[in-house]
Length: 238
Image (cartoon, rainbow, N blue to C red):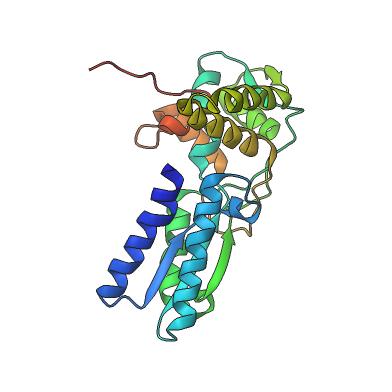
């Protein structure tokens, strides 16, 4: 339900408000994962992309740019603090799944700004990733251990773990609706633990630079919050 309200309806409301104010171009921040839509939020994003394209078809004076980034650097940094504190790096399967060339927020912002002025980016779907080759979770771990000056230490979890959790939560969700949201979160976790996120390279900021900054300064201002798998915030009573 949240996916529909945020990724579809709220964004559609923004489009309508912009059109009423005279906007002639809409730059949408989507996600590369909609290329293989298995999750509710991905299907909601695709519904809005279709609305945006329909708007341009109906009005030749209106145009759009749909930007589909791979992932933010911060999405790959969820275990950096754990490793700094001496923990093992946890990967799923053999550590070679879900390779990704993530992009920094600054480089993505520059790319989106170009969509406003670059005619080649109008009425186009634009997958985009950061510079360099895509890296696997194991390669991300090796990079982090190198920056920390630590010997690598790993712990592997089977992908089937997700299937078991999802199956249990789906069964409970048929009786208790409150279990449906955790089940969807588990599906999201499995998706990002197994699917590649690779796009054309853009920008100059590197993952190594970002990890080094996280080691020195933490993720303040870029916390993953409820989207984190490894460092989810604890609920606080008021």
